[in-house]
Amino acid sequence: MSEIAFGKEFSTEIESEVRATRRCLEAIPDKLYKYKPHEKSMELGYLALLVADIPRWILHMVERPEHLQFGYFYLYSNWGTGVLP
Image 1: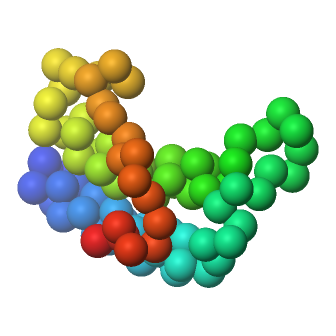
Image 2: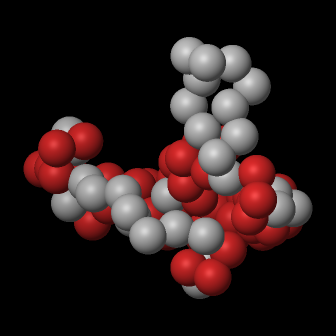
């Protein structure tokens, strides 16, 4: 498979994943962002933020492969359904 064909196929897959992820994230009510199923669990809102940021992380890896460390990648700190692109 050529690099161009791979890139187009990968792009199509990412677009599909973004749509599915958006539907899941939009189903989480704002009032549940602080919900923790267990005292040692992370808050649902923070977990949703991590999932929402996966496409941006992938783009970051592709555009800046020299920075493949979490120290170079910053999560959004002000989140909610209003910040979804």
